[in-house]
Structures are given as structure tokens and as C-alpha cells.
Image (cartoon, rainbow, N blue to C red; front, side, top):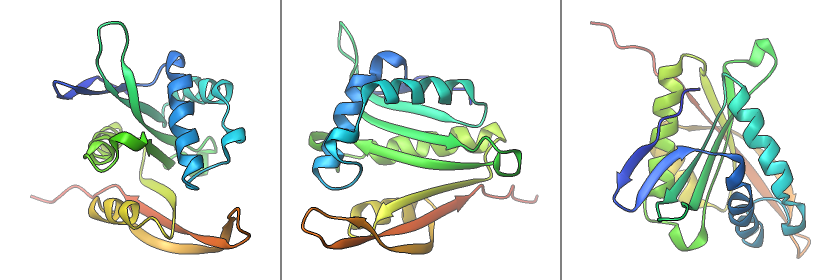
Length: 184
């Protein structure tokens, strides 16, 4: 999908992810792992992130963007959003959403800004009809954000994630369909 840099404020831009962002993205994903939101810390690999960026850039139905603070030498990446389009033709108009924001920048509207940008690009592209995501059942902030942007719960994956203490956590399956054009 076509990605254009968008300045949201003097101190924040959303732009396409590039391979050089892989280490910063891996750092944010590792923070999420520390919080129990995603993979374990030792499962996050900057090399795999770099390959994922290149794959998304090559696919017409995928989008990988970062939220960054512009600084003179290089941008400081503080958030990421991946819409990963499916390669099978029967699922080509379905994308899986992954999003994370650096811990110190959470609850400041960055996730919402990335989501609005990605939904706008996806809807305009004509490539994506449905966006799916999984979020932890105990992540009320995420569920609220996604619901406010038109996502609805489609189901739950019971006891999907095993926590370090041996207990289990559900994942909530949510999805958003591209809005139909209004008549008239």
C-alpha cells in the first residue's frame, strides 16, 4: 500500500517502516513482552523484524508504519503498526493487525493516530476489506481503542496465552470491515 509520511505534530510523524528501524521496533516489542502482551523477550529478533518490514513493503495488501519523533540525526521510533495482508488469493483482502507503542509513550494518542492513519490508507487502497486482530482479554485500554475505531469482538480464544505463573489468559478476536460507501 502507498505510504506517505504524515506529520501529526511538531514532535511526531508517521512514516513507512524501513529496515534500519528493526532494532528500535524489536526494543518496543520486547517491552511488550516484558508486559506479557506479546512474545517472550528472547523470542523477539531484529533480523526477523527486518525481514517482516521487507515482506510488507513488497506486498500490495500490507502496510508497516512507525510513529517517530524527528531528531536531527535520525528519527526515534516510538510505535509500530503492521497490517499484514494474507498471501492466499481467497484471503487477499484480509489483513492481520499488530500494533505496539513504547511504554513511556503509551496513553498519549499515538496508537490512535497510527490506527487512524492505517485505516485511512487501507480503506483508500481498495486492497483490504477486513482487518483482524487479537488482543489480550485483560487489556481493556486496547479493547476500548479498537472498539472506538469500529472494531467488534468476533470471539475469544480461551486460555490461549500461558503466563509465567502457570495461569492462562484469553485472547479477544476483533475485526473491522471496510465501511460501505454511502449512497447519495
